[in-house]
Image (tube, rainbow over all chains, first blue to last red; front, top):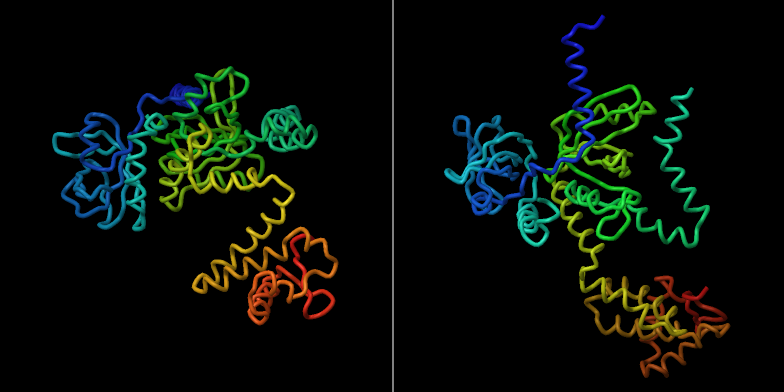
Length: 130
Length: 277
């Protein structure tokens, strides 16, 4: 006889399974290349790649693909000079991103191409992304 | 037993049956299905728009029928079962359900590497299931080079441009015009010589004169009139036609022989193009 707790977990998993069949485009993460785009999407979910410069407490100070400084708050520490992708909420007040998901992209990443992609994804081809 | 039958019928069996259909019917149906044969790199946002504009039967993207897609994104809510593994893929533009049938040990091994919170590249078949589109994956591979992420989205844009019919690239537009404009009898040998000479052109780019000459000589050999001659051409004929000293022709001919473009026939003075047999 399974415990009530187990049944609850199973039904939650089944629910998630059904959920996974739907397509949800309500909370896209917008590609941003740095400050300028961050200000456009303040309060919204964004994604960007930064080159880690230094760690300051709970924040990472990094260089964005457009060459400016960007602060990432609330994500685990990454080694300096690694490229890190951050998905989170943009905050124009202090030019930061509050991290939800962060991924270490390693030490080799083509920021120039990424920067171009951000421009395309916010320009002519925006409708393919958001 | 029944479960096995079901799996063969509706699940993993779709790839072979698709191939046989194409070979069986050929002709008109192959032109229809050709568009959907490739794997389209797409974003979830694009798929969600297919869903809204589709008639329910076939899935179209910008007027092109799409059946196989490539997606790239983060794995969420991975659920493992005995017969399949399913998860939600979040590619930053939206979320879609992915299902991967697990028949063999290799499938299981592949899916063990797929963990929630990691990036994967999914190739799969877009399936309309009770009004909801899901992807039945052929392969799910963890991302090892993160430049593939940038590349994937750039490919999505590129494919979008090509299927919506906007001008892609002037160089491809020009190359596709060549066979159209030279639709005469001469088109085949001309094309052959153009295709052929291109590589040698790069090789001897610093010796522009000799390259020009080698193109001219190759064109003479590729002339349909000369192609039809059993013994090919005498070098003196080439020399006279181009008004170039015989020795220079011999040098060029030697080069063309080494490239496999022409071959000697009855003696060391007669050569024929390999272009037409």
